[in-house]
Image (cartoon, rainbow, N blue to C red):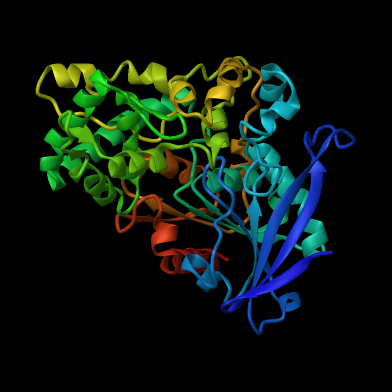
Length: 434
């Protein structure tokens, strides 16, 4: 029985479902999903259409709102909202170093994880929709990876959708993982240069920290190792609206005097650990490259690591040997993540097997998208560090009737930073289209 409770301005209801692990084998193993329904206080939920929210990631549960925060405030004026923890995240059969050993060997874990991409997530949504909506289609709002899921939804089950709203998440329909990262590294370099133009004092600060770590990698509480490469991956901040500022504040007080000489401060190390740890979202590291895999014959094979080797400006040793600024990396996963992060170390062999895996199936149907009849609107961020803008616009042209709002007012997290405005704009676009 569903349990309801209240927060300021909202009524929340917990829902649990069971769905097949492998939707191609409906009589096989089942897993549990969790979703939280949100309705504005005073509204009759039975009179409201449903909006399904799919979080970014992969590997993140739906945001835990308090009351009517961010875009939820706008959505609740006319929708009954379902915040779905996608399989493997949040309270939906969560996957981590503690639970994955229940699956058996690393090979068995990798096989299990092959069912945690957007294709399975969309089939989950379609499995639970009839019981919630009485069979009526619903609107989907997909942020980042949630937009990848929404695009797959349009490819495979458009009959389940009354509209699709995508924020920073229009994927390439055809790009391989290698092609995704070949496009990504120049964008990441631009974000670095923009950061250093804003905060020129950070050039020397970053070089000093990297040189210190090259000599003495830091051992953090809990077993996390801060190496030069791990330090560089703080660049993931540079794709967010205030990420450059967050990075600057982290760097400005990195060192403190000690009896043994300057040392990285506990405050800096704790701040870095909190930003770099995958303890709360290990699925992101495990299946990140797999979300781009569509050729059954080709493994992802640590695409970001291989592509990075062709961009020598990201080589910290070369930068420190000369006078170049240290370049931070971005949304990339590397083999060393599974040797420095204690939440990932036990999953290293599983990650290697996933990187070597073949048999991945295509995720998008260009012909079906070209004949699309579902109203679709997408916010495309002008220089999105995480999702290539050119790829997004090419996909927008390939989906019949899709309307875009291209803006440089927000970064990739625009729906979080100013969600009410972003959602309102997308709703106006799909309604103008209708």
